[in-house]
Every structure is written in C-alpha cells, then in structure tokens.
Length: 540
Image (cartoon, rainbow, N blue to C red; front, side):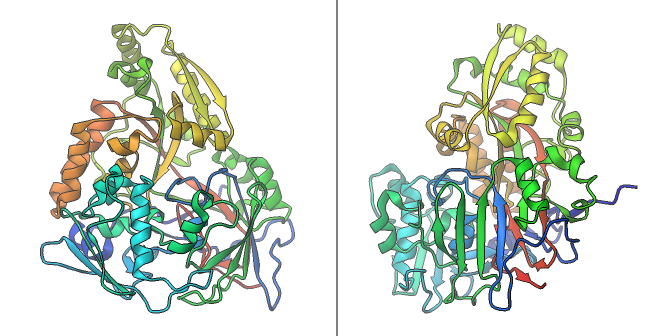
C-alpha cells in the first residue's frame, strides 16, 4: 500500500484575506516547511554537529550566475540568506511583516506616501551600519539594473532612472539615518509585497560601489542577513557562516555548506550516502525513490506559486503568427504529461496563474487539447513542415522531450538541445532562445505580479520572449491600481486570458510540485521558492 505524500502548504488563499487587507500588510501567501519527524536514510549524517558547531550540507545545481538578484533571478537562495529586505512575508501567518524596519510603514490618506523607520544599529557583514542612504541606493540601483522594473517605476522618478535620464529617485526622501519616505506616482496595491522580493534586498552602498561589476561574484556580496559569505569558489562549493551581529539574533545553524551537484541522480545518491543533508530532487526520480525504503519517508512535496511554460521568442519570424502559437498549445496533452512524465507531481494549467495566487480564475478549464484543430491552424498559417529549436537546461529535458513528441504528432519538428545552465541564462538574457522551457515562480503570490514579472513588455524584452501587448500591459496596470478586490481580479483574469488565450504569447503547461528530502534532526526549514535557513535548528 502506498503511503500518502507529505505536502507542504498548497498556498490556497484564505477566503478571509482580501486585497484591501493585503495593502495593509497581508498581501500574498507563503510556505512553512518543517522536517520534524522525518526518518533518517541509509547513510550517515552529513552534518558536522557537535556541542559547539552545527553544519548543514545542502546539495543544489549551479546556475553559474551572480548572487546579485538585481541582475539575475537564477540562484539557489543565496540572496535570501545573505541579505534582508525592508519587509518580509511570514511563511506561517501569510502576512507581510517588518524585517529591517521597526514596523510596517504608515501610508498617507491618498495611498501614495509610505513612511519607514529602520531599526537602530543594523549591521552589514563588513561591520558598517545600515542607513537610509543604503536603502535609497539599493532601490535606485534596482531600477538602473532593470530588475522587476515594471513594479518599481511606480516610485516617483523610477521611470527616469530606468530610462537613464536620472540618477536619483525623486520620490525617495532621506529624513535622517533611520527615517525615509517613498512616494508613488499612483496607487499601487502590491507595493509592500514587492518590497518583500529579493530584488529589493538592501545592499551596503560603499561596498557595492567599490566592487563594481564584481558585485555578486566570489565573496563580493555583503548583506545584513542571517548568514555571511565565507567562501565561494563558483564551481563546487559555497560556505555560509552564521552572522553573530544579526539584528534578529545569531542563527542556530552555525554553517551552511552549499555543494554544487548538477546531476539529479548524483545529488540523490549523495543524500543516500550521507554526504548532504538537504536537497530538492527531480520529479523524474519520484517513482524510484518513492519505492526506496531508505528515502521514501523523507520525501516532502513543496507546492510553490510557480508555472512551468514554453517560452516562445516572438521576434522569431516562425513564431509571429498567433495561429502557429495556438496550434503548439493545442497539441499538448497537459493532463497526460502531468500524470506520466511528472509522476502526478503537477497540476495541468488552466491559464498562467495557479490557484494559489490572487486573481486566479477558479472556473477555467484545463487549456484545450485538440491536435486535429492544431493541424488545421498550421495549414491555415502556411506552416506545414515547421521546424523549431528548443534549448533547455538538464532539469527541463524530460518535459521538453514529451512536448517534442506532442508537436511531432501535428507535423512540427523540434530539435531539443540540452545546454549548460550558464549558457542558457546568457542566451535568455541576450534574446537568442527560440523556444525554451521555464519554471517561473513568484515571491508575492499575487497573480498579476507573477505574470507581469515575465511578460510585461519591459520585462519580456529581457527574457527571450519579446511579448509586447498594450492590452495585456493595460490590464496589468488596472489591476495594480485597484484597491477593489473584484475589479482587481477581473483585470487580472483579463490579462491572463489576453496572454494565454488571445495572443498565445506563451504556452503554460503545468503548475509543478517540487519534492525535497531533509535529514532527521533538522527542523524549522522555511521555503519561499528557495530554502531559508535562518529559523533552522538541529537536535541529534
């Protein structure tokens, strides 16, 4: 008899939580992941745990990108564990809470001006003290680096910084070392929630400027978070050490050793052998390890606010006819793919926004599967004999090969190429991926922000999508500006339908679950897309 799967919160939004309450500080949902009671697997404990020191060993893939989340989102959680944001999502209460600030900001009656107070004496890892100028610098740099730019241009002067016509944010006012205000150019209902994102991490101005382009590489990455960066060889291992002067108190875990193990099979063998204590693993290995007596009781399923989709480069002449893109979507049997290739650890998409997020359309059906209609559309578009190239990372290969098979049944030939993660990241940024597979998560659990972070016109141009729809952008803007729940949801659903069912600007496939394993003795793990080690404890 198969034992039921352990699942960490599915992020279904409580009915009592409204958009208005979100604006007051409860926007979004999150995950609390505790591994108490998990059985130990066959290998010895990887942690170096004595009365004086606790070392957690984590296995992960090497994205071969900077830790600087103002230039990339492809890390294993380095930024979240090394840096802090002004406010944060509490992964247990599902509310926005103060982190670097003494309390949630007061907001003016017109909803435009937010007044903040930093905690006194917050230390960066280099010993310097955080001030309002560091906050101003970090948010200005965020816009200059075009990280989540469509969200932060709501700050007065943000568009000018983004465009390169200004070097300072006119809407940011430093009152003194610990007090500052941020003025928006219009009401933005998701603003507090966006300040929780790792893009809005607060960096020490002096250290970041001194590092220049090297910021985020090697050990050139300093924050005020619970762990500091001890070493980073960028190829095999990163070592984090607990920060003695952390403003919330030193973490109970003294050291986190992050080991780069790209191959999913090798990573799980390392776990079985006791060489690592914690890792996500591929759904392609589920059947194997759910039958493994040494491991099956330690598997936990984390359900993120994430969508796995086929990203299409709309600059490509072959993909500019919406009928072709619709045909590619119609050819995919999402339910079959979820049940077989992903071993049931996924939900077939009914749109882009998963049910865990605000603005999802609960009444929508699974995206249509109709290969006959797909063949007819290709014929109408004069696209018989269509050939495409799909470049993917190793973790996406099995799903892309399944999609390759579906597309072959409507006469579309796809050359699937598995490429290095670093090359993939560069190619996506440079706009040279014709077709690829992406799993895109949100830290906000706000559906309109999830979509916009990839497909708003200013973002899509940086991600090999080049989707550019004034209608979609307009619906996004309207949803963001509305404090009325029903109106915001209506515009969010319109944006989703515009993207997925009218323009076929992308092809949502599934909403995935991510299995992970954690060794007995560890407790207090939080997950919000990535692992958060701050609250972890160890008991032998």
